Image (cartoon, rainbow, N blue to C red):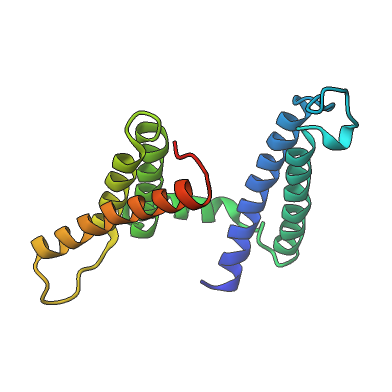
Length: 174
């Protein structure tokens, strides 16, 4: 990607991240700023709102740095034309379509399967769908054989991870 185009993307995304940082800081400010976890009222530095507020503030600071670099390089010039062109390319942008599909798969797993279906079944379904959509089979391997291999992996991986976490790390699975 050419440098001028990168600076325009930096300009847009730094603005988006600054807005997100502000949302995080505002949400953190609504959290309790005193902690009673120990049974007594503790100081502000133990409060549940401190960490998200710190992350939001750092996100704002670092995004301001990227924004300053983008503006210094002229990334803000002719931004409307750049955005119109980017929006016009969305129907042909295969990379964006892949990212959106990944987001849908993750959202389906997190909000649709976990907690509603057994963890092992949910994870196997998610892994199988993900690998089926994004795995490129080696030349010469039949589609059925490839799908069976992916299914075996999708079943074995959650079983192995679940066994390790529950047996050796004593972490309960959802």
